[in-house]
Amino acid sequence: MPENNVTQDWEKYDETLDKFIQVIAKNMNLYGITSSVGRLYGVLYFADEPMTLDDMRDALVMSKTSMSTGVRTLGDMKMVEPAYKKGVRKDLYRSEEDWYKSFTSLFGNRWKNHTESNIDEAEEAMEELKRIYSETADETLKEKISSDMEKLRNAKNYYEWLMKFIRVVESGEIFEYIPKNEQ
Image 1 (cartoon, rainbow, N blue to C red):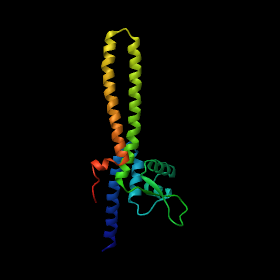
Image 2 (tube, one colour):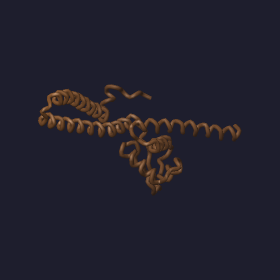
Image 3 (tube, rainbow, N blue to C red):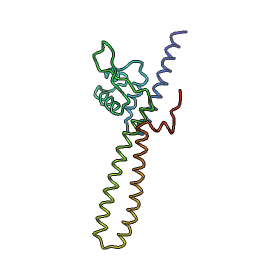
């Protein structure tokens, strides 16, 4: 095979992987993860060997500080883990290749924090409305508060249900209801 065709094949290969890594980055953006961190995960996922921060910097043309921050973010979500290779003194990292595990961790972390905050906000609003209700003489306002308290109770009930769902996802119990696809 002529060398020119081999070079073109490798270029097509790189282009195809780059496109898919962009898709990964875009999807992670839905969960509040920056595109650069999403691209970092994609590069680590397709790497044949664990990578150092320098390797990542070279692959993504980003600063070492950005790589360090990205690795820490992905590590907190259990999507990247430290790796060891005999004779290598620099820190090495590899991606978590179980996308189901990555999803449950990412989903759980992101949604749990927001949902807990929403429950707290609903409770605070309910307490404040109760205080206003007890202090006002305006019957129209009392009716409006009563109506809105019901809406807040419904919202709080939903958020409490969502916390149960998040626990089912985080624990992996979700796979009892929706099994993982076999390879």
